[in-house]
Image (cartoon, helix red, strand yellow):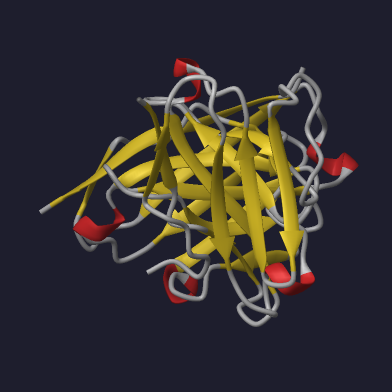
Amino acid sequence: QVQLEESGPGLVKASGTLSLMCTVSGYPISNGYYWGWIRQPPGKGLEYIGTIYHTGSSYYNPALKTRLTMTVDTSTNQFSLKLSSVTAADTAVYYCARDYYDNSGYDEWGQGILVTVSS
Amino acid sequence: QSVLTQPPSVSAAPGQRVSISCSGSSSNIGNHYVSWFQQLPGTAPKLIIYDNDRRPSGISDRFSGSKSATSATLGITGLQTGDEADYYCATWDSTLSAGVFGGGTRVTVL
């Protein structure tokens, strides 16, 4: 079955860059679908970060666009997230997910990774 | 605040029915399919409704979805203690060219 797993540092210094990787198993990213990142600040709701296709075509949350870069590597079946100039407001659980049904129909999710931005 | 508006909380007794509304606009719900997610404490969200009213395999038929104009509704019948969770609606927004989520609704079983 399809599995997604987030990896990366759990602690990032303020003004630094948050970098996360999502490793997909059980399904080749090159076969299609959009792959996304969603985050959830402690005690708050879900926030769309962005989605990327296996061709590299991507969509970003306008509020994060100037700080965000997403890439995909079909040879390793991974996609990644880089968010620059982070502040405490970027502290959240970050999830990667597959947008199987389009229109934010994420059918498979990673378990999430907590990233804390420290001052 | 969120692009999609949900009530912060709803509650009902076991066995009863609850409805959760999700209000948007023509740039999102009005022209795109809506999904719903259930998030149990400490876990990742789980897709329970997609394409407005379709259930993924394995999701109980106690969960139902509907859409009318720029609003969507999630219904849960035969409420169980295991249904206590946060529920989120989501869709695409053409103006933003981005996905959008509702603020979430906490369901409490009295």
